[in-house]
Image 1 (cartoon, helix red, strand yellow):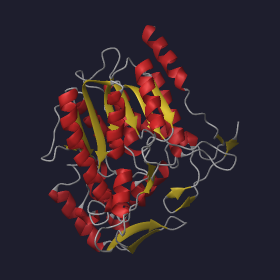
Image 2 (cartoon, rainbow, N blue to C red):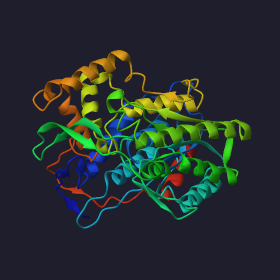
Image 3 (cartoon, rainbow, N blue to C red):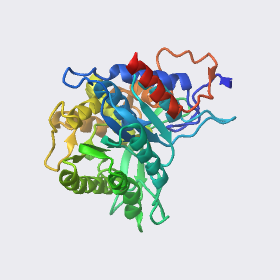
Image 4 (tube, helix red, strand yellow):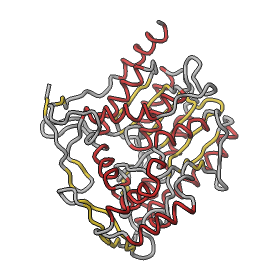
Length: 417
């Protein structure tokens, strides 16, 4: 067994290695932070069958854990992660998936975790076969949470690449960086506007096309249960980051995602009495969000304003599961979106963050933002700075991917005991 002492090495917010024990503990901490089921939501026997596409990181991981604990889902999670090599550890999502499998097994929930290209039809076929053979041939819920740099359209073979750019004119914004010693710096960066087919490419990757293809694939196999619900996870955010996000290329993709939700909602309502929504979540430190100019600074300032009032993803997703399963009514805005971000976007909170943003410089940032929290959150994405872990001790890095055949046997044994 390959054991190593691992120390955090990074290039900006990207870490070269991940810590298996730290990743496992971070998943356990998320599980503990998830609210327990209400009496109305506690599973009676087998829970609903759910598919989470993008289950290993960020809000997709939160959706998986909250679904397991809050409503007792069983079913399938799909992600794309890299295993360990001689020179590198596995990705953090690989280790988080292994820990998620352990928690599902301990809870007696049959959860199959697949590693592969969620955009491919071969993965959709694999999932459909599992739903048919292992989960009674009916899927109750699908949560779609995919952030990817590129997508190959299985129908045409064309590969599209997403970009983070404003639309129409350059965007100059403040952003937060840390040097190799962890010293924070507030810089101004300028991002050139989208050109050519940048918008179309980004929409093809991050819009609703693949989400709709998942629904088409499962519906064609007759696998959508009566009352089937599906939610794609999204973000709107602050006016401070709107030029690069909601009004930029990613925002165009989010608008396409929301338009897809309206189309799917009408269709599912007619065919299976179902619903399709987008869920607008609040700000969080994720591996994808740290790549967006200005988001790191905004999130650090937001935490400085709200402190413990910043709602973690697993609590937001617990609220979403309540709505998807009928424990709580669907609470939709005028655009038909579930809004889990209202705590972030109140006038008072946004005014306080905007005031701090105006005066944020390298000299003042430590007084305005919760930098200790933010930098620790970034490291925790990779399993570092997790309380309770001895980072001086060697740790096994060759953790296997969860065996998809073991969960049904273990869950069945528990259910029958």
